[in-house]
Length: 370
Length: 96
Image (tube, rainbow over all chains, first blue to last red; front, side, top):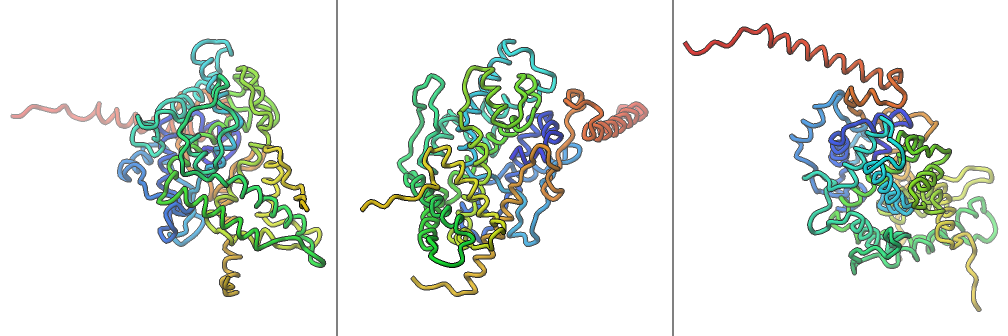
């Protein structure tokens, strides 16, 4: 969310970091208020994620206009009210990918050092604002009644809550444990998508076959549309089962918002990056330098995690929204030299980086055992 | 398995790609070195506090900072008018 609030880099991002934390919280509340809401779709669908309300409109509308200029979401992209796409947020997989870089723990240490002493030097004036906002928004309990308030006596540990959500939706834990190297303790729900990784990889494998045969209009064609449809239907059912009645929607909104703040922080030489003398070219290179300064290494494949996060989020949202309707576009042909369509381009990126991240080459053909 | 009517298949075909374009459009993010998000995807954000603006890394010559400072000075004038009204308004007298 925060990357979209910024509007541009670095200008909009620098202005965003100077905002008061109450304004940033109001922005999130307004984003939830403006979320796409099509009641004709099932609850939990990408276009009808939740019926849980934001702050009462009278209260929130007063907060919106109290600032100069008043807070306003982007204009809708459609005319019919039921399909207005003012605000969507990334899929939970986005938060999973970004968090796998260890960015949250790395900036924990950054804040710890800056707020307790001067081992990392004295933060610049601009960095002071970033530090205040980050501590206020992401390293303490959220304000009461906010839509992002998902911590309580019942679930006091936000890191554990995130791992619980990832486990339920993807059957995956993060690639790192606690700081002391021990496994991180969290509630592993019995209802989780234990087949997600297997089915998703098989889907990527079949999608790859379709992509490399995009110009194959004569002769035998190994594309298997039927199998792709079966895999996509499986994925859709799996993901939507975890989202029944809007389950996990608020958590997803809170977690992707959180991770997008840190992602934005390292996407350019932001004030805190300059304060840490961690300027570099490339998102992952900045993170590596920050990690070096605080003595906690980032994941070595962080570039792939950053690069896969956006396209995989969009593809999973589309699968949830449209199911097997995506398949004809995966297997669509194009004349030689023509460009792939947007869905094929996104899948191409996902396939490349998924193979790097997992170490399993999705592009390699299956070996038939006789 | 029964075949879906061709018209329905065509609609799902168009819908999926159209939906992906809409999703990508709404989820579009700014990139370093590229122009800002298009106007219809841009949030209107309030100006930060004037004291906070003084810490903007690009300084007071930045266009966005200048715009905000102009708005803040407009607000200051309103405040001055308010104070003047309070100063000039007649003193409240007690009940006669």
